[in-house]
Image (cartoon, rainbow, N blue to C red; front, side, top):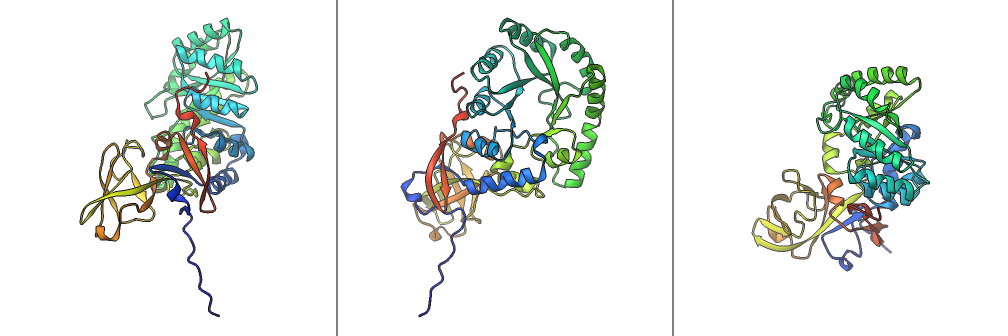
Length: 373
């Protein structure tokens, strides 16, 4: 008897997708775990402090903790609380805090004593405010001085840090744990050039670190970099690095930093809702469903590689195709976002895909501005 060989399914296909509405966010845990392993195989755990702004999901962070990762970065109070809820030991709120955020940080420290919290400062006035509020609360604040190494977003120029350090160190209830330097602007595609740019940008940082350690009489921690430079910083062996996108990966990083080994582990799924012309189809993936801060194309379809996004509105994405007769309404398309981090934040939950089936869902709990605190 002749046997018919079954065609192997693509990794991303979901057999029971028609039980679920679209647009939706899909997460593939097996691939997430593989990406975590790829990271921990290349970077010593003691130098790892992943950023959770990409995933915002407690179950994903738990997978990282199961791999031995104990230190994390967060951009919001909600992300920090999500980490504390799963008892992450060490949480850096990598954001300058002032006003209500200081009070919320204090509330986090009180509510979650099993986690150690720290935050960023780059000016004296917020540090003074932190000192006053922490003194009143009878708590000790752990802070990192945030450096501007060319990103020009937050931070203080390295040459101005010595004066700031001397002023902050005299404040009560504040401990300066180290320096923080994010170099998200260093994303030249060529790895050799990116490495040279990174080394040049961090030369004054390393000099500053030595100066501060001499004044303090103790070692301080340097936290540096994001996804594009994480392996460069890891190779230096004297600083923590903070990739975030690695856990899901996206089309943008795949194109911009091709030497990194990570695989796509989160997709958006949509359906064709109309066929308005002989060379056009329309899907239900609008601005509200995939990050829209970049120019088109903002998503790339694994099972419709030649379909080109040409127009997008709140609930619609129009694709140009060679012959729309090859498609029909209701067809499911699986898309890789150009930028996964803000895409995840657009969804209340993500469907979990295992063995080509949706088996449950995970709440994107930290997409909210607040959870409990």
